[in-house]
Image (cartoon, rainbow, N blue to C red; front, side, top):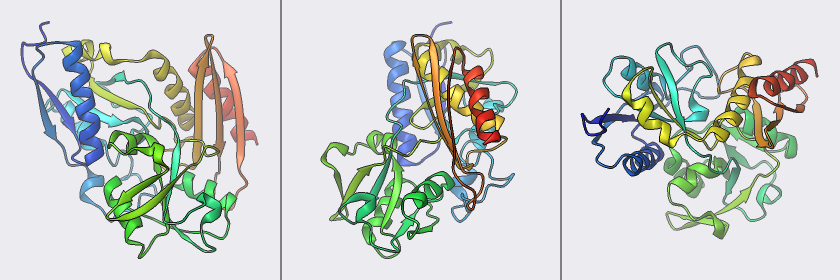
Length: 308
């Protein structure tokens, strides 16, 4: 299996973040396999085309909103690998496909990006926060019940621009990993967008979405791409995100469920903590457990959340 035998076609969405993540994967593959020939193919997903589709209202059509077309292209053999943000992927992988590599995880933190000083407490009474994530909106509303939450669509630069404009939104919540991969220096505590200073506050208390901060590369079972991608795979990250995603599966939900989950591994044991808000009116449920395998710890945590 020579890496130079034929070009490896990488499929990706066309957003700035998706292209940055695909560039990272390409560079890692080329470093691991000198002489590897690669081509990039941009795939437009339903989520990219239908920019008015409400992400906060999960529907059968919304499952895999940003991933389904990439997986279909893999199955048709139009592409050889597909690069995804893991948190966008449904928990069930289609038959014939496999998550061949999960890269070492970046930061899992969520960040409040605001026009106002003082973080969450510095937001004015009744401030409008743009977010299409039930997890983020429901968790933040527990801290500031007076805030108003309005769905926001668009890629990361578009969302930042909407906050900078200040016409509709006072703030939004974005993943630290995505901002970092786009080249933003988060150490300064602020961003300059269109001449406007936006303040950054890490929401250390907010548990992330399952798989947040992780990039995964999907391929067809048995293809040469699976072997090539093995050099990029990080087993510890894979075990931790598997535990988080299994909680989502055991709760019977999808990517838009108001579930925060974060796993870590130490001395061969996986520790997992999670929060779950079944509905906007329901109280927050929390759980934590430790076990030897991702499946064991996910089942323990899911059972706690269901019985709370």
